[in-house]
Image (cartoon, rainbow, N blue to C red; front, top):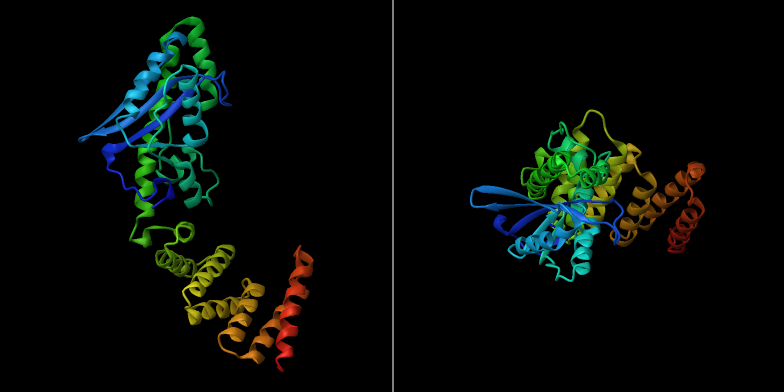
Length: 333
């Protein structure tokens, strides 16, 4: 589904879920990865391992143990691992003169989640747990508390001080698994009725970027149907759906379907400037109906002048509309 896999469809036994806890949140050579959480499937069991560096002298042994496990798997699953966890781990391997076991495939869940659920207030791991998985953590600490707890442990050598960190890391790994399953089910869902209009729209855009045009059109069509059936219409969402669906129709030369959307937009006074210009293009180039095309272009000009006070680029838009009108008038309309 997502480009991160490069077309690779893994078996679950080939996956390893990774989350780290570090001595700092900004990265850099002074930041150590004192805890590496790893989760993987073995038959019907899910095994969660935590590789803890109890003191700095244990770092080479910790990294060797992590390396052995990573080399057994083909694909790493993380959350923001591409920007944080893996670069930091690789840095620690280099500083310890060890060869970093770069994964063959890496799915960073943050990026597809941001694409699919970007309409949500937050796409942090905890926020996605609450909003998508209906799960709220109890007794957990904030990630920002982790470094100080580790330094307190180093000073006092009381392993109980790290129990909240270990618990936090375990929850992160479990959440990674649940979120990956939810993401895969959503992205591969055939029963689109279970998705909201916004989710369907976002999924349609993802499919569009992957050049899966027919699947994208089906998603956008379902999104459009659901959005129009709602008692309280989200006009902004409807305009986005109508624009993108009509563009998709244009690409596959479904001109009548596209024109029907533009006519509906004009009728409902949604995205009227866009709809009238697109309809004028269709009438001119596909129908050779220059008189009607000119009518739509002039209507677009009138709308633009009436609404220019809240449009930053209205002068450039007016210039383009006037150019279209001049061309159509030159055809003897």
